[in-house]
Length: 384
Image (cartoon, rainbow, N blue to C red; front, side, top):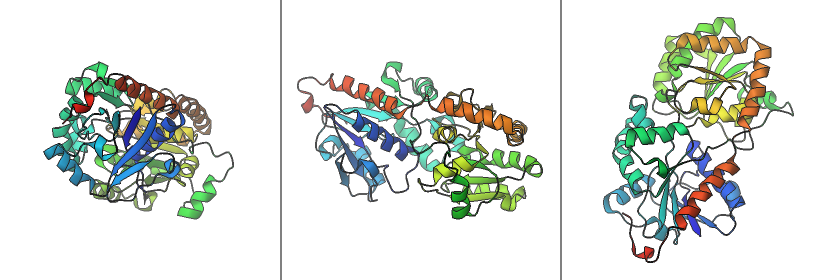
């Protein structure tokens, strides 16, 4: 069996979807058996394959990704499996399902934020994805999600047959571990000049991440703690709003925007933090929660969407818009060393239950099941 994955998200500045694609491919290759894996990248950007280089052949189509999406959407050609040299299964890893000539199609739906919380999502995403998502789930032969929350959203919002949906929870990269060597604070102080304690947020600076509530809550307790609030993540369409909130609350240099943090430094950023906070209005999974817990950092998160599935009883869950509850929870952790130690221990235990190897195993089972359904004459069928 030959499986081709869309590896377009594997760029130098890898974000959430790229992390998913990279780790899934890495662990699929480790379990490959008789299955041959290859990649297709439709992008003018340079692909960053990391450990996959030399292990997974990748064919890159050097055209803008959105231009190819438009061609596929408008004309239904060229087929993705022919572009990639032929395959039995094509895995569309980032929502968009291209046409195939013969291959069965698997699509990963990371979340339905553009339907569940459109007011917090970029209009550039809401309009096209709200229009196309129905067709994507209809033409797919199988749908992968990594939370029960997204599975429920697909059933309730798009009336998808639940037998089509396969849940394969993801994990955090192996790089995220406790700071056993005691080097993390030195790394962060030397690289970023952060010398004192801090509360950490990791994620794109956009309305869905609910930084306004985080800033309001932090402002309410700023006189009770010595901490900075460190915001690490790319500046998305809500950045100016977040900066305006920072100024309105007079937080000044108590908030540190760090933009994108390189992969090799990110573990130290979690390891050095006294608390990680993710008060999102909606998450398809919330992998920074797992990254923080794997590093032994206590977590506070919102009690909606997939976040309770990830945190379990290891952290504190609060309503996303409850400024007082978030402030009280943050303060209770930051001022109680015993509680922080207990949450750190429980977070390590909880995060150990998530495994990329298990995610890959469940995904490979879906590939195998679909390949087994390829019947005589299937090469003459074009899926548009």
